[in-house]
Image (cartoon, rainbow over all chains, first blue to last red; front, side):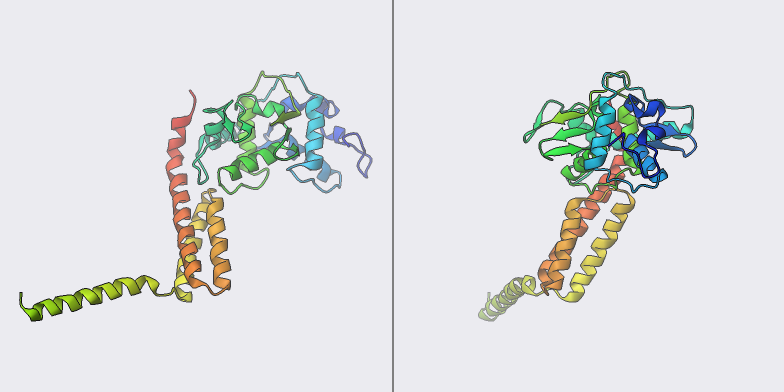
Length: 197
Length: 107
């Protein structure tokens, strides 16, 4: 799928450094021209659109397959997220941190409630993963899904599990959250695609 | 206490009892539902602006609409009031968390 040319003859590789091989550890990036965080999922869909193809769903199926391949080619590479000397980049990081620690939903959970205070504990049949390095294993196979899911899918389902209405995939909040979680995992190796019970 | 006073007191008590039993049984009207639903929607709109809607609020709003469509304005009004209460709670959460999130931060 990754190597199959678009209708115009170009490929995903033409949209990424090193033809998209072994670059997972550099995403998300901060685009100083746009002033926003660019996740790998967003970059893949923008690549498709720039080449005249319809974007994929951000949640699973093709997007999960593409990111799984890119993660696999990057296994062992250390997460290497940069915050450029741009106040908007630091603001995005801070926004991501605030989102991570903010309680939401009727259950009054923040991301940290599960992934900082309770990693290793069970919520029903699920074992909670630690926040540190959680992005390195994305995308993931989850038994609950009986299939692969993207980072977007994980964020949306985390929200709905706390009875919060999820935001739209790749909203600014989720992009900033991924930026924060990835930055704090700098130095930890990419291990995706991963699996969770 | 005279017999007249006792009778008067008993009648007054009976009236109060009848009213107390009868009042909750008064059916909610369509107007009651519309007012309750409008208040709930306004609160949910505010929660949306704070990017903090709850799924349970949405469920109650949908239940209110469904009951109203079926002509059950008692259930519709009750669901709308529940939705407003949930929306107000989500607004409180979002507002208080503007600063309180820092308490949870690892330093």
